[in-house]
Image (cartoon, rainbow, N blue to C red; front, side, top):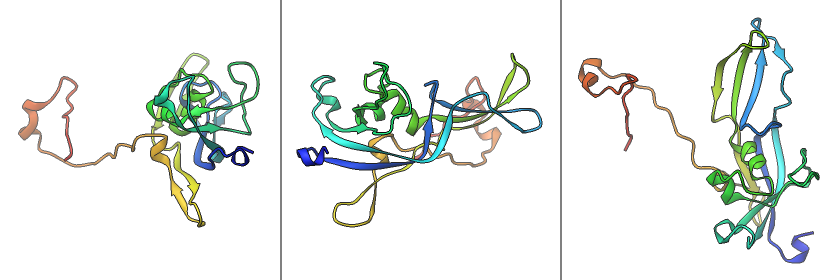
Length: 190
């Protein structure tokens, strides 16, 4: 419909898409001490989720947020006004982490940036985090290339590149005077 009105619009697919029901930016999985999954949360990770983007000028938010806006025709949650809708959420706001803006920017931010956390649930009052993955959610955010069937990766429009961890060994005696209070060494890659 938006294209027929002359508004640039494209379909977006987000792989490993988070559905963060309680908007805490964490997809929590609970297990008991034997490893059995406990159903204590409504959070989930979908293999993929699809929404649309349309190009708008955002007079309501300011020109910083002009550009591609997320519109989801299949919203799973009620928005601020109590109706089922999602968007228009600025992709710039999502990338910058401006989750307090109207139009579901926090929900879309979580869909592409939530942490995936596994907890052992010992009792009603005690739980322990045993696993956390800050990179699992929001992979290969894609659209179709114009004029071909090729995929265009637009992940950079939604989030900054993930930090790559590098494992290496160093001599303790060589760096012991450089240790911080927490006994960690700050390393900068060039």
